[in-house]
Image (cartoon, rainbow, N blue to C red; front, side):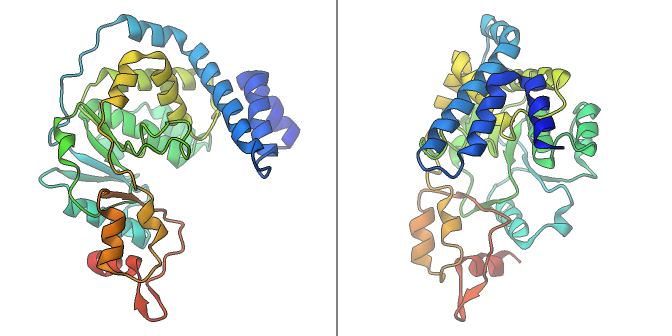
Length: 312
């Protein structure tokens, strides 16, 4: 699709404000200082658009009474690797083994393209959108996780979380859990309040139903994505306009503040002291399957090599 046709499609779907904001961010990506301004403009345009499209749903939710007394308890841990664990890269296998080791007596379910239907009643239209290339596997997994968490509860972890200790004990007693790392500047959309790749919630939570309703409404009207971070935008709109959603996020105790730090030292020579310094207050460590991991440097085992030897 040409640039002109793509721009025309965006204007038709989302209007001039959103289209201008997205194009402005793209054009200023390499300009220091301007990029932050462009990001704020895009955030304002997309959240306004999504709120206006979902105003009735949000206002209806706000008029209703919502109880948040149910707890996650020992709910299932859900992990997805679409192609199947046998075809996963080593870092994903390492992470899943670390999750298996550190979830106590919780059940672990590894989802893939052959078994996810056994656990979900997700509308088949979303699989059709995936097969047609209208949404990516990442967006499909967002839809899948919300459906699973609403109907079954538990904890969803992306397959690239390396656990260096037991899941936080507070999870069982919470109605809702996410990684609340507090990195406001690095994550201006979530303001450090949530991490959509790590979510835990009790089954049939009204808050998750609201997210699902907005997603369903979105795909009733659109077959293209307004942004690849649609889930975060949905969370942000609800956080801005629903007091109970905002309370749900702020009630989560700050945790895993150094969630990204282990990845930064993965190719450094391993030492217990180094890993301990990075993971002392963080047990849920986000990795990246595209990172160029090295098992050793100059003949010395790296941090990655240490975990590889531990789990594979």
